[in-house]
Each structure stands twice: as structure tokens, then as C-alpha cells.
Length: 351
Image 1 (cartoon, rainbow, N blue to C red):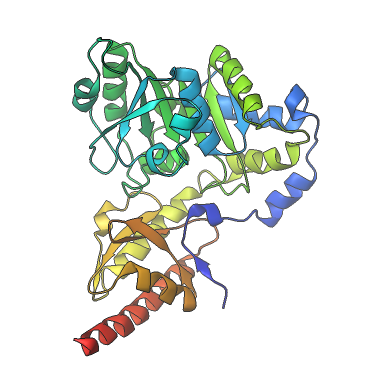
Image 2: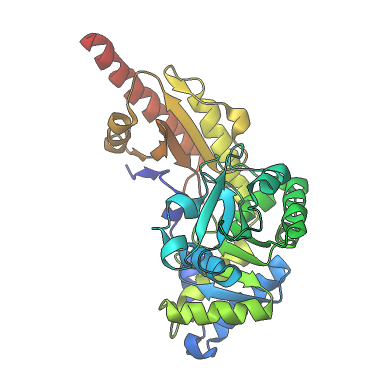
């Protein structure tokens, strides 16, 4: 039986239709701006996000690092939630590439407030780093796929502007927030100078990310892309996957959200599993195990045909995506239940 892969929505594989679209893509020299498919993707992404221009990049990790480098100077500070992706999972790129310091705040499920921004801004004193940038992650990763309410986004942006700060949106899963909330992408993106959008997560493209903003900032971002080795040649083949994803795979994210709720509701019925289905807003489910260590649980479910990941702090994370069906979710619940019964029985026997 095929593995049910809930490790991440990065596990998505291009569909047969996407592969055909990629195979037929017109190509040129992307580094020179001559790849027609890359150009089409950038133009379509810019329209979607309501920005003047967009830049196709290999990954959102590169996109975030470039955004920080463009919007802040070495030694400046970036306000972001303590669980945000650049603070933990980008290899220290914020410091190594952009030379910036991170100023984490304690949000709720990855969402912080205007008041927290105000409190985190440094005094204008040469003893302190200069506060330069606020970065928002929407949806939140370690926050369990939580969606930023648009009114909170606007209040945070207003406070940031009041202090002369720039704004970056780490929208790796922005389209999940759009589909879950009904807020258009351009409304979410409007307050931000630069916006990251990942194409290779729930949208289902095999590779790539978008960085969008005004033309002046994007010209500087392109210089950073060249500097970091991100410029490509006949990249239309991979850009076509992103273009197909934007045209066909946004609305269907609702199916992933429904499957995540189905998973949470199923897990909630199992002894030894602690999860609140009401917290599942998009395609992520975080849950805790009773009397079982995640380090034992995760390889055990892989052996039974289901893969999930560590959610940190003793939690387990499962992420739904276009390659996982409702039937797969039901099977995953059965596997988790069976493994938990076995592991908890073994633990009880040892006691």
C-alpha cells in the first residue's frame, strides 16, 4: 500500500496535467529576462498579489533572505513572531545573508499585535540595534496553520508605519489563508513592501517561490538573486509548474482544509491523542501524545504506511495536500489508532 505522506505539503508531486504543461513550456534565458514562461508567471503573480512586479526564485527560504536584505541593513533588527520560519528553519540566513538581527515577540499561535510591535521597537539610541522591519508569517507554521485576520494585519502594519518601519509578508502558505478566510490575496498583500509566496507547498508545483513588490525593490531583489546564485537559464520548464498552480490549484486548497479537519476529528476520538479540531483552520494538524514519545511514534507509523513529522515541544504535525484523499485520511486515523494502542499497551506492560 502506498505511503500516506502527511509530513508536509512540500511532498506534493506535479499532476499529469501539470507535467504536460511544463513539458510544453516555451523557454529562454531567465537570467537575461528572456524566458517567456518565467515572465508570464511573474506577471500573473504580481497581478494576483496587487504588486507592480514579481520575481521567480528557487525557494521561499531564498525569497525571505532577499526580502530581509532589501528591506533592512546589516545590524538592523527585524520584528517577527518567535515561532516564525526565518527564526528557526532557514539556516541562519537572516544573519548570514542579510546581516540582520531578529527581535522575536510572543504571539498567539504565531499571530502578534500592534501593541507588541510598539513594545518591541527600539529607542532611537546608538546603543541599540535600529528597528527596521516587521515580518508577518501567514499562515503560521508552528502556530498550527493559523490565519491572520485582515484587521490584525492592518493594525500591525499601521503601527509599523507609524515608527517608519518596512513590512515583509512571509506568505509561504498565503493562498491557504486566502481560501480559508475569503480575504483576497491582494488585500493581504497590500500593506507590505515585499511579499513571499511559495509555489511548491499546497499549490503543488515541484519547485519555486515568488517575491513581489514595487519595481524599485524588485530591481534590488534581482541583484541579490544574482549574487546568491539564484539566476537561472531555461527556467520556463519549472516556472510553468508555478503558472499552472496559480491557474488551477488555489480554490482546491479548500479540499485540503476539509481533510485536515477530518483528520483532527478522527484523531480526537482516539485514546491517548490530544487535539482540538476547532484550532484547525487550514491544512495543518498538531496533536500531542499521551504516554508515548513522538520519537517512538513517528517511525512506528511510517512502518505502518503513514508519515508525519515532529511539531516541536512533544507535538506531532500532519499536513494535508493535493496528493492525500479523504480515504487516505481515514486510513491514517486507523493507523494512528492501531499504533497508539500497541505503544501504550507496551508502556503499560513495562510499568
